[in-house]
Image (cartoon, rainbow, N blue to C red; front, top):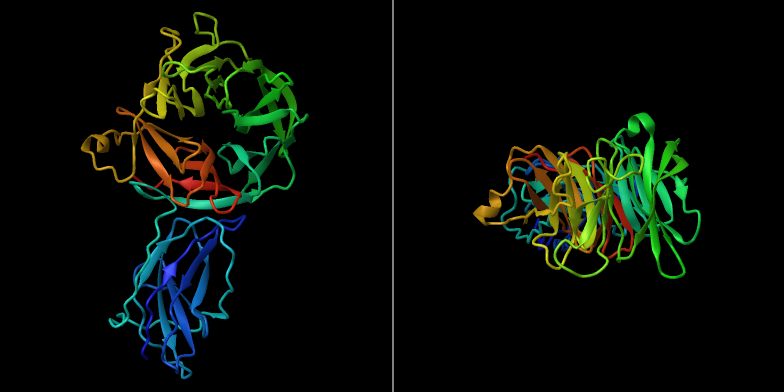
Length: 443
């Protein structure tokens, strides 16, 4: 058969609102042979080895709806005649699954009707294969991405207890739970008043024992002032109750919010934005004991433990260090670390810049910036961009830029077990927020 396929391409692949499967859209030109009555599409996860086949009758479009985001799939197409004679395979193409929503296409009429017996492709068929980029990647490879939920409205914070239990703040006035990859319909907590916003949340490091979750609440007043409090709640059957204010009434005079984290000892750290422009690291980092007092080792009895970004976007703790991300007019890098001495000497500490190695960086200096002797990993967002960073601590700490090639913005991110991140990703073309679980590639 004179099969004349000139193009076959993969377009956007999307996760369903729950569950993580997605779409790959294929299209090709019609065959000029009048005896051709349909096509067979072959699918596999290894080159030249196809585990599935689909009959699409006399149409030139096909949607593969079982794709797992982050997995590479291989495709080939062959035409067939009424006598079930199947022509030669087209040139093979491949592509990664993506997670940006696309409208579903009509599904094929039949699947599994034919099994490929071809060993070689027809050299007369010239295809222009399109290999779309991996949806989330750094220089170590493609990340495995699972879509846990899709929400219509802004998500400003996300947190994980590491037990398939994820909290998200939606619209700044409600907290919802994703449990075992399912978005629960019931709200865990709603704001008590229209002038109260939820801006951050973090589970207690001993959540498995005490079920405590800390919620940052910002109250706005008619004179334009804002006051931040951190309240501790207990999670009972996915409802947050037993509210107790631990850190009360911190005035926020700068713009933006204050990211929060908690270390293994239950100490609370806040990255507070700057009140005015100044030198680099004009913001501050505050530290509190689990009962809300200033840290005991601070000789000044002040909650200020370090300088910080003027416009902070993230804070995490690992290896007895604070890791910060944010924007600052005079800072050398959007990522920095703070090492707090047990004696409190030298407080407030000035952060040290952590330089980011971007994917495909060719500089030998940048290539050696990170040690393979990694002792801890954390993830931080760079809001307003399509990137987040994976920070790796060790003899030579550094950070790797992670590209979200689908576009859109990274609204929030939280670390999981050191190899997993949970990301709230606002898509560019579709005004929705997807909750993603991202597994780092093996090193």
